Amino acid sequence: MPVALSLPILTQLAPNARSSYREAAATAQPVLDRHGITQNKLRLAHFLAQILHESGALTLQVENMNYSAPRLPVVWPSRFQPKGPLDPAAFANNPEKLGNEVYGKRMGNTQPGDGFRYRGRGLMQLTGRDSYREATRFVRGFTPDAPDFEAEPDLVFSAAWALPIAAAEWDAKGCNPLADADQITQVTQRINGGQIGIADRRDWLLRVKSLLGGP
Image (cartoon, rainbow, N blue to C red):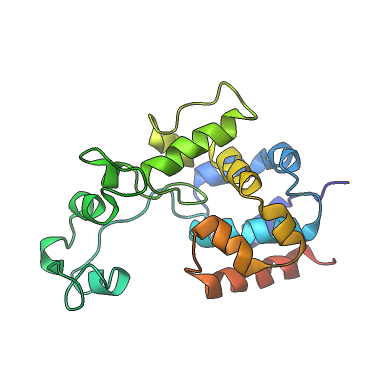
């Protein structure tokens, strides 16, 4: 029998969740069941830990690109002075310019403005035109009439599509077996492409496991 996603537990984990994510959670069960995420508590715990990290406890819909000059070299040390070539003052508090600089000409971003247009969004913080195109393909495998998220990127954090996208991506990237083995580093690698934020993801996993209880 599938594990039920308890809304009171989700509220404990993310008391300041955005309204679109709260609405998505209210109808989450069929989506999570479809992708096998609720087959056991370990899978659900790992899935929740990842989306809670990526979305800042369900508070982030769109990546905030508004950085101060001192913060830019911390976030992108290889790009901004003193280690990188770029002057932080030229990009500080200018989200569009920054997005186009740090995300442009990679991750499928080929057109002018793509870097900012395809900045992080949603429960998995999809980033780059390729990721939006991939999300469309993943979701249409189960819902053929799903929108084109590449064409309408803001739908990625909508109540209707935020969870189907996150669950389909999780499934397509083979995360369920890794969660079964309790392999958070491997799950994170599939979701993030690296180990960014691994300490925070571990903390979330411990919290979720504690609230879900049992094996």
